[in-house]
Length: 379
Ligand SMILES: Nc1nc2c(ncn2[C@@H]2O[C@H](COP(=O)(O)OP(=O)(O)OP(=O)(O)O)[C@@H](O)[C@H]2O)c(=O)[nH]1
Ligand SMILES: [Mg+2]
Image (cartoon, rainbow, N blue to C red; front, side):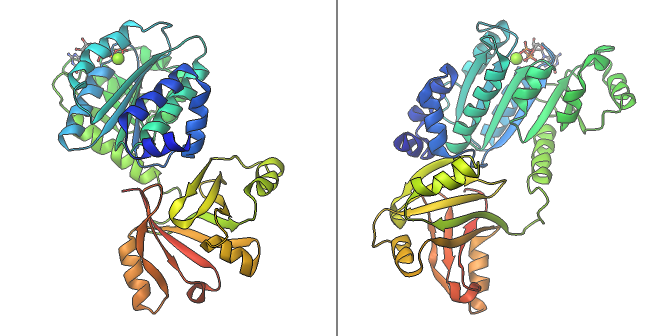
């Protein structure tokens, strides 16, 4: 499964397609690939699009896709229909519309219909999103029809959610479940070429709906730029979760252990941390187990060879905290600044297994702990 994970990370579209099919089919290999990937890297902007049947969601998604491709961004589209048990009309319609993109390798499209339990559908959607994110797609769009609990569960995976409404909905505004109000980051009034857009906006305000409103005419592409900009802004303001803009964030704590298996008995089995994934980092000759602990994670490091950096650390110091890893907004700038101030930065930044760039700072400069600095985001 390590090999599949590596191929997906390298952007191999055939490996991605196979793994996506496993996720859709509930094949046990899906869980293993997702485990090896160790969760969403968080590169992709994941956009959720939901709203009542026929509101123009697919037309809008198609326009957003064209606009993003024109800007050179790659994307994945996942269309989910919890209301139909076979490939429903909506999804069939999407297929035809989406054929326009089929020859474009920069777009990966999948659609799923419910086979009974919608809870499974939410999990599968999250699985597909994790695969697409890991494969380096810049944007992932999840479209789902409806405004009930099932749809809310499905779009929860998104960084930013657009709820698509149309003029003339009248009393329907009241019928839309409260949950959707909490999850909506942007309201789209699509079909703004129809009469009643002003009235809908007034009704929404009266009902206490407070997210920003963007008007669109999806069939003409009007308002799509503004919608994308609004969604990107939502992500920027939501993403740093309490950390100051441009600041550092703890990415992980690396703990050197003689045996990952033995250490997992404590961290996973007794303490209850989830095992997010495992990998062998060839260039550091170390085996790693990643255990998410909130946003940051704990990484257990077991030497793959005695004469590796972690192997030598164990020999000299025994098991224990090996390094602290922080992400920085601009790695080159941080390195230049630290060097100028006389800190011992080891080597130049290099590229790790997951494609991220990192550098180490010697413990003599940091109060006795090896410090890893990682470029924020995964370019
Ligand atoms: N006049 C007008 N028609 C639109 C607009 N956007 C979409 N439509 C039309 O509305 C119909 C439904 O559009 P879809 O994009 O399939 O809507 P949807 O929300 O994806 O529908 P489901 O997936 O079935 O829920 C199509 O005939 C579109 O051409 C718009 O802005 N103005
Ligand atoms: Mg649709």
